[in-house]
Picture 1: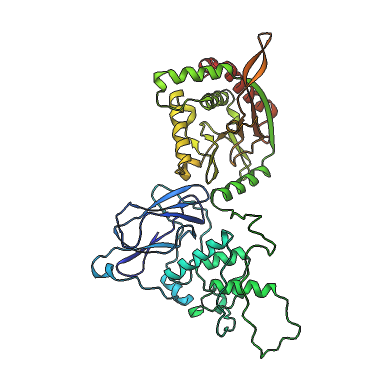
Picture 2: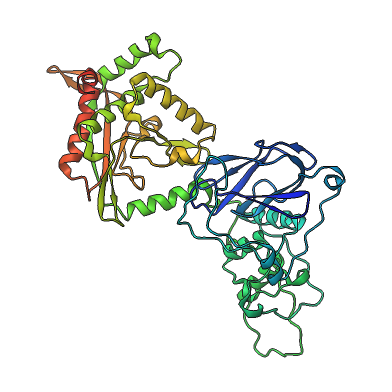
Length: 484
């Protein structure tokens, strides 16, 4: 996690705060150069593909340098902050800008990892994750900040600034012996986004380092038509930078939003699930008038004072009862092992819409909780999600999920399974509707439930039984006592 750049300065690297994550965006810095930090103090908040996480510093010292500004996406393993830990004169000296070493020197200075190590207290790492290649050159913090800010501006649709034309473009420096071209992390990300092979880029930076302008120049050169009769002795004119958006892109009529973080991970998971598990969805319309009356009664019960009591609480309990009566629904299909894995516990996922996108934290061992305990867990889960403080661990190992689309006034939907689960229940809006009750048409509180399931391991009979049991409990909530 940390490396020593001299006898008194430590570099804190971006850790893998989930399992196999490769990058994270710096959302907010809580410290500035010159601030004193202590072991365990939170120095910044980052957003990964799973959640927003606060990063604590693992030692005492004085902040020397913040290598990246807020809003920058940084690769895991890249140094993000320098802290002076030696004190005295060494801590008071300004940070010296690192000079890019040759590939051989950098390779000698950076030790070879012997497998992934724990990177942050409280978070595990995947031992099967692909090992990242060591970076070949030391970073110059000031230049890294400038390039990262420019990359973020381009991702926000502002377009790059036109680079200054080089006085005398150097000949392409071909990597010696197949070595990796020298470039800072933001420049590598820009090249990746634009589809540029760094090995083909002419470097103009000191010691052969590829700059952001060099990448844009390569894009421009590829887009320009080749001259009909080029003369070797005539130097090529300096290419102008081009914007990353199409030429026809009008910022007054369109807005381009980078796909990253939680939204990027959600999109990948939904595509993987939709085209892997054969989905089947069944529907049932339910009279939940008695459930709504029970909700009002529980709100007046002293045992539930201060707890979150709403229809979702009783729907969650009804689903847990249905799973207890039909345990085979609480399983998943292990494609690699060609096995159906039945879980003897329920980690109940609750889909939550947040400013950063849809997340699905889950209540661990929800099957073992009483109704008041479940109310407390639901309240804590929702509050944490709204604050953007849901941890990656809270979104892992779910077994079944509830998505409440009714809060948006929607009758129902056909939800997509979360990867690793076999069932998801969608709850529609609860509305006052005409309903035949005891032989007469009366206004009743009615909702529609939709259960999607993986048809590889859940057949129509099992799916129907689970949905019917949930509906029966909501129609007659007293069954919670006899069935639970």
